[in-house]
Image (cartoon, rainbow, N blue to C red):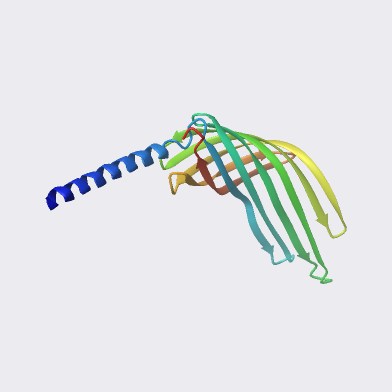
Amino acid sequence: MGEIYLFLIMKKSTIAALVFNGLSSQHAFAQTEKGNWLVGVNVADLHYSKDRNYGIKQYGISLQPDAGYFVADRLAVGAGLELTLTGYKAENSFSGEINKGHTIVYGLSPFVRYYFLDASKHKVYGQAFGSYRESYSKFPYGSSSDNEWGVGISAGYNYFITPSVALAAGPYFNRYDSYDLGLFLGLQVFLPGRSE
């Protein structure tokens, strides 16, 4: 009797494990289905440099949170924010005078994203976006502000560390008054829609 009871417990455990694995793998393929959401944050323009000859230090970082909605399978539309800080510190080697300055940039970037490769652990996408941003700069002898419109494209790679959380990385290209080419690193979370 004990052997039959043990057999039934093992059979139920096996069925439960198979059902759970089936649901998990189904969810792993559902990240980019119509009706789902994505939210995340990217880090870009992270840099620090120091010129020993002229005593100039420069730094910068850009945080770019974003959110999107899948209007069709693999196709998401959304918007991101841009929050950028750059600065410098320069010391005059003759007079010892120290000059400091910084620039703060904030903006909004609507985007359209399409996933070309949509495997369970790896996804590759292309993205087009527009952008409006304003900047405020403070220098030792005054300040200035500016605003500009731009467009850009980017490519991204998602590696899923869980069925709904992915690391993100890729290159981007912006066209404002000047050209901006760089790399981003980030984290994306894929959320199921109400139907799931």
